[in-house]
Length: 115
Length: 132
Image (cartoon, rainbow over all chains, first blue to last red):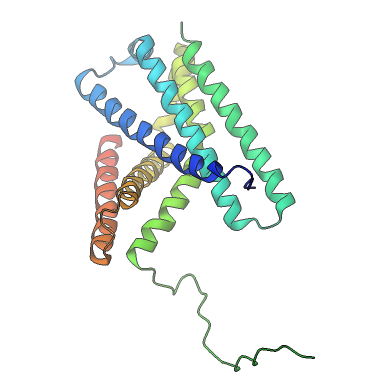
């Protein structure tokens, strides 16, 4: 639901959707470039070592969080278009929101449990 | 008292809501595919995180993930995810250009829509060749 007392709400969703999108495009290009110039060695050790640098894990987590927040904005938009019963929509938003929070925590755990 | 407005004339217009017979203009096709691909990626996200997790956790889970990913169905899902991601990204970049008032004229809007389909299609094909 849009809170009319906060006129910035719509703009900030709009702006965040684009900011996260640009973050993802930049990361995707960097990822392709890294694959081309510095491909991981075959096998688990090579793959694991590829994720070892802190800088790579940091931008990967930034990408995943940007993706998850972008997904949240998209999910809200789709629900607003197709689910007109406000009670049901609120419930679906909570469920999908919890799933995405879980995804965000999981992403951090995956990348920071590597050490 | 009835309605103060004159009654709308009765019309027997044909209704054509069969989704299979509606031909969308190409920018509309790109637009709905943008939405569908986004929803698809949202649904697949936990699966992708699971694969990343297994691939990085330890040697045994890495090998298990490798076996799973080599299955033909898994490869098809990878290809679908690739296509969804590339289409969503290309259509999204087109959106950013439209935000900046580039390509608003109808002929440009059509041309860039076609470009989105072709570029994401070709890149997906490239990924498919690499996967098989």
